[in-house]
Each structure stands twice: as C-alpha cells, then as structure tokens.
Image (tube, rainbow over all chains, first blue to last red; front, side):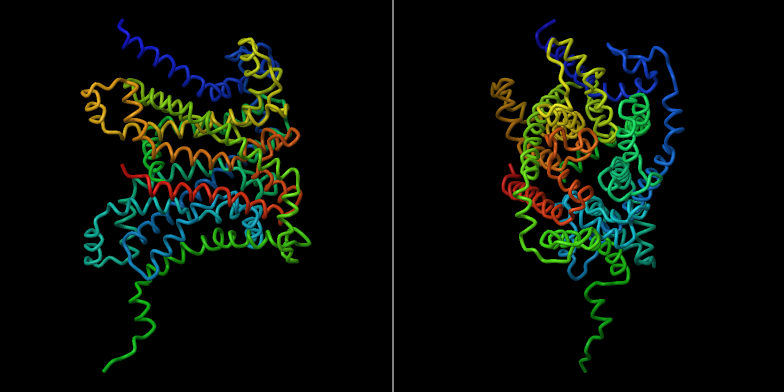
Length: 274
Length: 301
C-alpha cells in the first residue's frame, strides 16, 4: 500500500474508534438495564448480561408511577409542539407577507427574545405563572412556551421562498385571509414544519429546569423530573436507574436513527443561520 | 368636500386587517406575559425585598441584594466555577470537534453513518445520561475507573472529590454536546468551494498550506459562531450539575444558574436569586452583543 491509502486507513480507524466511544455509553445503558443487581456491581464489569433479566423494568413500573411520567412527557411535548408549529407558521407568514404599522418594531421585539436565556427568567417567570394558576399542572408546562421566536424566524425565512403571486391568486379567487393561511400556506410549509417539529419535540422532551420548579406533585412529574427523583431516592440501584434511562433515551435514539439525515441537514442549515 | 377619516378607516390604512390584528394578539400576548414582563420583573425584584416568596416586592432596598450577593462567598465561587467550566469545555470541545469534522470531510464512505454516531449523544435527555454517567463515574464499580486502572493510572472518586467534580461534569458535557459542533463545522467545511483548493494545488501548495491559507480563514465565521454558542451554552449548564452533584462537593460545582435555582427554590430568597439572574444576563448579553458586532464587521470575504 502507498502512504496515501495507509493514511486513509489510519483515519478510518481513528474516526471509528472515536465514534465507538461516543456511542458506547448509550449502548452500555441498554445492556446494563438487563443485568441482575449482582451482575451490575461486578468487578470487572461484564459487557453483555450473562443472566438476562427483565426484573428492572418490572420494578420500575411496580415501585414508581413511571408510566404516568411517560404519559405526562408525551402530552406536554406533543401539545407544545403542535402549538409552536401553529404560532411559528402564523408569525412567519404574517411578518413576511403582510405590511402593517410597526411591523419591523414588532419583529425586532420578538427576535430580541433570542438574546434572553431562559435561565435568566426563571424566578420572575415562576412568580407570573403562579399568579396565573399555572403551577403544578399541564398548563404551566405548556403555556409559557406557546410562541417560539426561533421557530417564528425559521418559518419567516421559509415563507420568503413562497411566491407572492400564489397568495394574490388565492385572494382573487375569493379566499379569505384565514383561508389563504390554512389552505394555501400551511401545506406549503410542511418541510420546514417537520424540521421545526423535531427540534421542538426533542427540546421539550428533554427539558428539566422548568418542569423541576413548576411541578409540585409526584403524579405530574415529566420523565426527566421523575428520573432525577429516582436517582436521589434509589441511589445505587443501578439496574433500576439504567432501565429508566433506557426508556427515556432509546425511543429518541431510534427516532433519530430513522430520520438522521433530514434531521442533521436541517440542523446544519438553521445552526449556521442562527 | 374633505371628510375626516373615521377611526375604522384609519386602522385599516395602517394595515390592521382582522387577520393581522388577531394574529398579532395571538403572537404578542404570550410573549408579553411570559417573556417581556419577566425581564422587567426580574430587574424590579432584584431591587426589592419581600416578606415571603409570594410577596417579594414589599420594600425598596436599592442595591442591598447586590451588595449581599457580592459579599457572599458562595456567589463568588459560583462566578469562578461558571468561567472555569467554560474554560474546560471550550478547548476540549473545539479541539475534538474540529479534527473530527476535518476527518469526516476527507472521507467519503461511511461519512454519514459516522457523523450520526458522533451526533447521537446530542439527542439524548441530559438528565437520563447524567444518571448513566453517575454509574460510569462510580469509584468502585464504574467503567471509567476500570479503564483508568487498565491504563495504569490512579482511580479517582470523580464526582465526590472537589478536585475532580467540575472537570468530570465538563467531560460528560463535552461528550453530550460535541456532535452539534461536528455537524456545524462539517457543514462549514463543505461550504468551502473545491475550486479554491484546486487552484492552490496547481500553484503548488501542500496539505498544510491548504489548511492554513484556505480552510482556516474561510472557516473563521463558522469558528466564531461555534465558539460563542458553545461558550453561552456552557455558561447556562444546569441539568448535570443538579442531578450529578447538587452543586457539591464543597461547592466545587456550584455555578451561577445553580446558585439562582438554589436561592430561589431551596432557600426561598427570590430577590437575591433575581439579582444573580441579572448578573448572569449581563454576562451572556455581553458575549451575544460582542458576537453580533463581530459578525457584522467580519462576515464578508
């Protein structure tokens, strides 16, 4: 072999080794969740479970309202995503295709929110949510996140590609303004909406800080809050903890593996524009 | 004869058709209540003191919250830890993600599969992987000490040793976050037109020169973006700190966001937490504005 192809082989070996290290903790979570309490504490550790057991998963649902955590997370993430898709596409359409007094000012005000990190708003947002009766219920997990400045900006960029003639034609054909939005624009925005829905869903599914402060009962916990509480209650029962983590991580991992290409490409696009 | 326009007509001439008006209300109402108002209220809270959590604006105390905060040893530790954490994360992240992206840009076969593998940790729940890493970092049965021993190094009590705790979280954070930067760097590299390289090669440039005089300058805007974004996200880190160490041991992992959370929701000192939030906001805003200013002036090539 010449040096060029030798270099390439070395490059592949290094890149593959790095990739294995990156993926390893995720696979380790899965294999560990099928181990018995004795095996999971064994030194040196085993890789594949020698005595395959589903006991950890059974215990998870017996000792904790784990199913309820799951349902809570699903309800909150799906509802928030649908609402954000609606407000983002409406806002994108409005700010790209309409002219009205103060439009630029409104738009800058909305974008300015991108510069304010959520963590900074934690304390006053909690007080405000409390005064609206949004502490300890689904509303508190959803309503503060109805409008996403990032989503609106993304959809505005996308609306810009839609020719104005199309909207004009719809108007001449007697379509109402709402009708044009719902029947002409929304279907056209599908590709951008699917990218936005993935980001919004994953962000929401994984979010921790806000649910941690706004939820005050065991039954309303979302998955991350439930997992963290489990960690502090069951400390070293690693089998149970790995089972819980597996159920949180793996559905998203599998979803990602199905849509990886589309996901990463839209990320690179929006990331660079961000 | 000239007639004064009625209010209705004037509103219409401003462009506020029913659709525009309704949409604006739908969009601006939630933003006002859950975003603009909290910003204002955060500032107000930081200058007041209250009798209880739900009545935090009883007495105007000027800068007392800030003074108390500055004389609080834990606050100073939190500031130091916030920057320390960034200084650990930033070099590790860039020095790993840029070479990986360069490598991925060189190969053709399996590029997408490898890219996805590097990105995979970024889609996981931070809380879930934090508790997985607690297991990995376990001093007795954890995999990391097993590997450390095989390599002939000293096993450590990673998360319960104040010397190592912040660094251990930084390593986990780099693992979780690396994929974003790999993807962004790779996209940036692929955006560099190949004819630049071809032209330089015809002029007799070698591999290093290609990297130094074409890749580096053309990748600079992407590099700035990545550095700023990584810095900001490392300033705001909360989940692994709360889950893995609760700010300990001996405050070794207490950063600003954790300080805010702890004061507001564990010590119930809302006003002091608000003052700390203002400081955090100031730091992040400064970096953001720096980046905006920088981007404006240096984007074009």
